[in-house]
Image 1: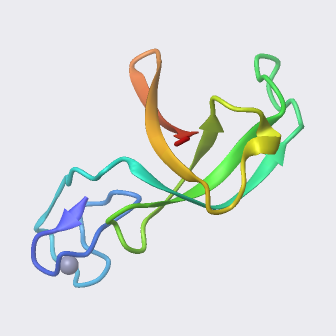
Image 2: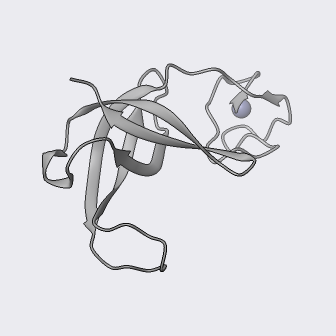
Length: 106
Ligand SMILES: [Zn+2]
């Protein structure tokens, strides 16, 4: 979401701008690319269907200052992920939800 009054981005999305308290907010299209800001590798099988290990990362989105997305890095071995890696979004459908996962840009 983005505030139409002060232009601040709002993530996670909410109906009121956290910067100026305006309710004049609306969805905003962003690039879908970014940089791995930090990450960890999960080895714990928290759910019987979970495939481990997997990467949990915080991605800084391009062109969206101050917005970070907590997500998974997919499509490569976990030991090939590093801070500063360029990534792009890859939506994965699970039932009626599309999860924004990220893969490395090579
Ligand atoms: Zn605002």
